[in-house]
Amino acid sequence: MLTDQQIRELEETARHLRVEVLKMLHTSQSGHTGGSLSAIDVMTVLYFQRMRHNPSNPAWEDRDRFVLSKGHAAPALYACLAGCDYFPRDDLKTLRRLGSHLQGHPDMNKTPGVEVCTGSLGQGISQAVGLAMAARLASRPSRVYTLLGDGEVQEGQVWEAAMSAAHYGLGNLCAIVDQNGLQIDGATEEVMNVGPLGPKFLAFNWHVLEVDGHDIQAISRAFDEAEAVTDRPTAIIARTVKGKGVSFFEHKASYHGVAPSDDELERALQALALH
Amino acid sequence: MSEKIATRDIYGQTLVELGRENSRVVVLDADLSGSTKTKLFSKEFPERFFNAGIAEANMTGMAAGLAAGGMIPFASTFAVFAAGRAFEQIRQSVAYPGMNVKIVATHGGITVGEDGGSHQSVEDLAIMRSLPKMTVLCPADGPETGAAIRAAAAYDGPVYVRLGRGKVPVVFDQDCDFTIGKGVTLRDGSDLTFITTGLMTAEALQAAAILAEENVSARVVHLGTIKPIDIDLVLKAARETGAVVTAEEHSVIGGLGGAVCETLAEGCPVPVERVGLRDEFGQSGTAEELLAHYGLTAAHLVEAAERILARK
Ligand SMILES: Cc1ncc(C[n+]2csc(CCOP(=O)(O)OP(=O)(O)O)c2C)c(N)n1
Ligand SMILES: [Mg+2]
Image (cartoon, rainbow over all chains, first blue to last red; front, side):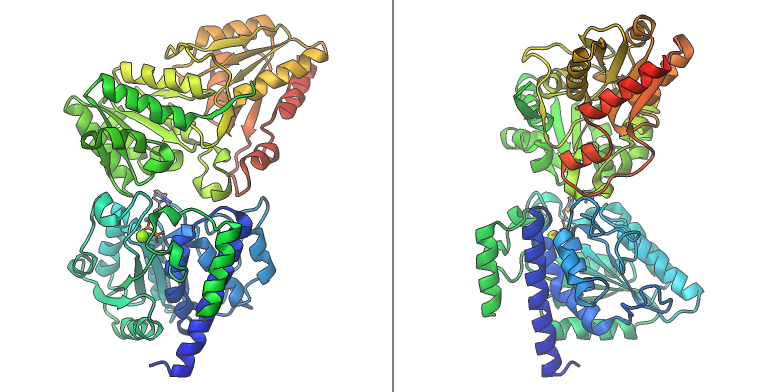
């Protein structure tokens, strides 16, 4: 259980990260706004409370691993990594620029703290399965977390990964689905309905939890429970709002891959300051 | 050459026309219909449009099944996912049986820009070209795209068409023809030949104009079909000019440069310079910055021409 004080601090961190995401996307004028904002609260709990990691030694062998399978939410990841001091905050201004270490999609060879290369949807979760297998083989205490989009789970590869994670009994693996109900072409249910997700993961022999993906306490408790289940992987279906935190970005597929304009940034920062 | 059009826009419009002309034309996409422009078709013919969701391998298999059932499917997504993610489905379900499926990939090459190397296909022409029975097209501009899409629809068999993201200069006339397997000489010349495809053809025309001022006569041959390559036109250019510079928004391995070198090595060995990505992946940046960074501009083509003349 988090104390009220801890919750307040994490909420404040999440608010700062949203500001960073919006500023960096405004500077780059290119990138994915909606899916970065929906993922912030889950990633805040992971990077600032849950995961054992050491920003001054990113290669620490026993660290927990995070794989952003929905790689287009790179701005959320970069905000977390900068917030943890993996690299200077100032670097965020170089997002998507020629020569920057902050590529449009996460690149393990360029950015300190990025574990694997993602961006092609469906591939991160398989790499997370491999990382969990490696941790077990090497008798490392590491846990592996991976965040997927609810459109991403339409990829058949996701279910191949789900099958193998359960087959190998990977209790050290936790997959979170950012269930914001939208993908690029519209509502996930209308484009290609892959639901219901909870029963699907259950049928694949995963432990399954469903939480409000913007409730810090609930997210943290879900990670507690996931860690207590040691004989199988856990899937956390996190109900979220695409564009969360900025009312005029919320619930809109049209803001999937659009960066804020000058005016939108100003209004968004005002809205976030009032929270 | 002042007007600029995105090839994907013309693709979307042409699909709608084809849909009106032929009720067997069906379209598939994988959650990118706004970007690939198949959305235009989906609005007019919702019952003949199928969004596979983010599931490119299944989309390709469904397209093969639709073709087996007598339809003329066009399946679209970004080039990395079209040629890459669904490669083996293309091989087994489309190319091997010779299925009448048109894979029209948008966002080919590095001009995808800011999304970065994970989204920039520099290998799609090579891997598609390696498949038996596959026809591979890479139009230069908007007008040629319209004609190429119509040619693909009329042709019975698997076709891969590579289109781009950004707007590119118009090179061809509005009512140009497209014959699969035939290249086009866009400018005559006697000292060397630029053999180019896609958006590099406009750069080659510019380079040839610059070279003319230096009294170098450069021919420009555009290959809108990478496979089957126009062997006669390529050999003729080599025989008559004695030096070839290839240019493509793609790796120098296995694509246009590779195809031209294979053709020349067997038929008329002359010095060749290949302009393209030199066995490397792309990265984030604007399309223009990346073209300059990877040496894909008219100025770089002029330098390549100077190098090849020294080797002649
Ligand atoms: C294999 C693959 N196909 C297509 C894309 C293009 N793409 C990027 S984001 C996206 C939609 C993702 O929707 P979802 O997983 O729900 O993400 P979120 O809503 O969290 O942004 C698509 C189709 C991709 N990156 N990878
Ligand atoms: Mg979504």
